[in-house]
Length: 460
Image 1: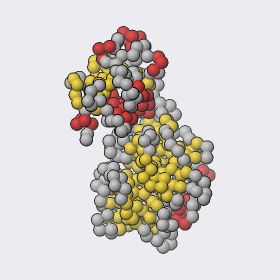
Image 2: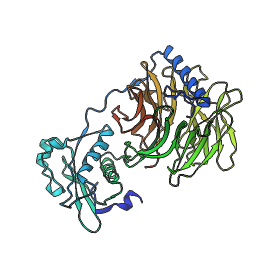
Image 3: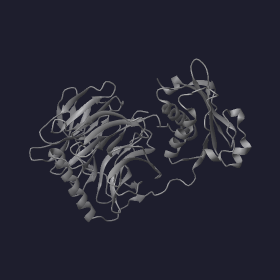
Image 4: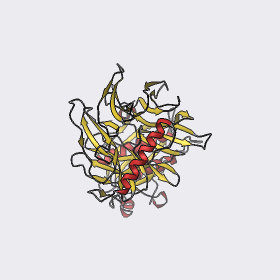
């Protein structure tokens, strides 16, 4: 059910693969080859680093909007489950993750209203709060949340809705309320009710396990959809969010699998001799871009027609060509190649059979491009000041804005609205999930194990 269908209007609103990155896990066989490729590229790049045109973004906006989310009341409903007062913390965290908002500390609230009519605008203006969100439980046969927001400066009621409580997933209620507030203020769809997937490596040999996990965008409500004693790599969502492709070594060699998220049913779609890696769905879901190896070990990009199982070779170069992803219109592929001597991002209109065009020129290492939904930019991993960082590359100019400052930040993936990226950030001996906004606000997320290859589901 859509958000608009499930909301009841209370009053009218007035307004992977093959890994040429430093995050490779060193394992045997095909995955071991991938690790060697990654290490060689990384060492080569570190040795020849020189400043390019890269722009560094090290701080978020200094003019964040102040939002007060007043803890909701259960209206005296005994044993209320879920505890609706917790919603405020989730909504506040959602808004702060975007880098545009500062949530007011609940201890600093000048009052605790639960309806618009209880809001004393004078007090909030003195506290320099821009927006106030209030809410309460409506008792009855069906438990409901009555919530509303007001613009403190204009005194305008932005919206007033009633939402049925989701007793099985209370955090989703909070995310949906945050989506509404974010959209009303910014005009941009929120992504707080979306999913991500990632690989979590847990335990020590001989009990080491690779887990394919699907979770809420903030790492909560994590669900393991596959647990394997052999490596799993490179998850990739289909455009409709119904399927996920990944590389598995469960058969002691590389296989590309496609799994249905609803049923758990899965099938092998590529099992060629050597490397089978870096799956990526076409926008219409009919094709899979893959990295396959030739008998001589050279890596190239292929397209697999899922209906006919036919393969079309897209790149034919003695260099390593890998990590392909589709542009939103499906006509072009972005991929990583070292044909210039160092890993860089290239673009190829595969339908016309034209030549690949180099897109990235900033620094010695730019890889793993994933295009934003509007087709104007791509997330990349780039070597910057001695560290592997997450950046956003403008596809028209090739200029890269570096958003993170870690030593080893890898596998960035855009949110569906293009305003946030999820990535893996090395902290100590393991990598963890993190978010970064377009203006460089970094938010560590909940995760366990050594996290690899996060990917954001493209469905709102």
